[in-house]
Length: 144
Image 1: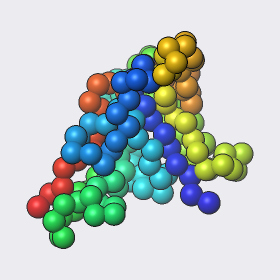
Image 2 (image 1 turned 90 degrees about the vertical axis):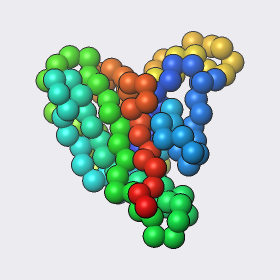
Image 3 (image 1 turned 180 degrees about the horizontal axis):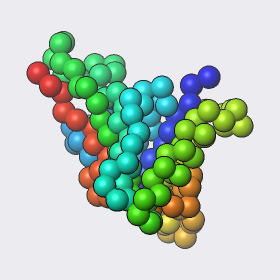
Image 4 (image 1 turned 120 degrees about the vertical axis):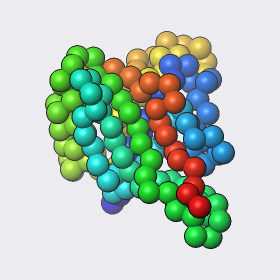
């Protein structure tokens, strides 16, 4: 069974565009197959960069027939400097964990206000996860 990783960067669910296939290159939420990850690594003192095969290379989103995007990325930050390894290890363990048998892993969901304007708790796979900065879910435009 495939596993999917979910990320959302906005705190108010009403502001979630959730459309990675749109013309915009910075959706506010994204769900990607774990098998499409091409790399996870630290970035600076408290950043984590997750690179994955582009979603625009799927179902004709790439544009012209021979267009191809090499990768997209998500840039997350941690609460404290130099805790990226702990967070990366937790993401990898979740991907390999047979307990996640429904195939869905909510890695980071910043929503604290749902569509009914109720306060809800943000979801963080690891407590050191702090944020996905604005415009840091990057779905690249096709290369031509």
